[in-house]
Amino acid sequence: MIRLVGAELFKLRTTRLYLGLLGVATGLVVVTTALYFLLAGDANLTIEGAAETITTPADLRSVLDVSGVAVLFTLVLGATAVSSEDRHRTIAATFLLTPQRSKVVAAKVAAYLVAGIVFGLVVEVAATTVALGWLTATSAPIPWGSTVIAGLALTPVATGLAAGLGVGIGAAIPNQLGAVLVSIGWVMLVEQLIGGLLPKVGEWLPFAGAGLAITGEHPHMGTAGGLGLFFVYFLAVVAVGMVVTRRRDIA
Image 1: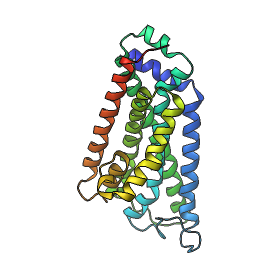
Image 2: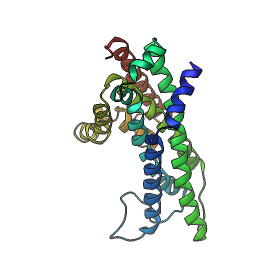
Image 3: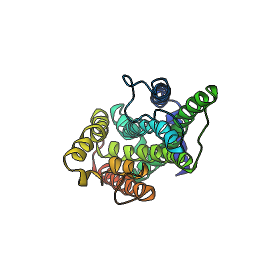
């Protein structure tokens, strides 16, 4: 199993997709974090939700929370883990080398969990560097606190789990384009529609529910509950992916 995980990590290191997504996500976070400060106090060009001044730990956490965009990137990354092998017709060779298909999926999940955590850490470092650099350069106080530290710790966990969940989606939907579209569509469209039309239901969806819990806005559970909810979805999707992978024919 360790060798399989190592092989999957090697594949990630030697393909451009991981570094490409990481570069785009990091650049997006750096620009967005900088805009929080550049547009602060401008009534005409204010980013929705941006604090006008960073005076409390909650204000600083709201700025650093933009790194949560990395979750969508790692979800898409995970969705390509199995589906890309189908696209490039390497999946048959993979299963010939390791006939236990569930073991292959499990190894991919483990590897992408690690890759997702690293992804989240890099994005967090980028956002934090910009924020602290700005505050230091302007001689503004840096309101560190437990809420900021908790927020920084949660993002790598979320990006890791999102990557693993993406692997489950890609295993259940072997078509690469389909897996990516389902992943993006669920987060950007389905959960948004359900949350708007049926807010009580939206509170229990994986991304919306966990997001509300992490930010302290969920009416029924806290941060631990939100992570637990997301983990249940993670296990369910991965289990479905394993079942589908075991049963389908490989051309």
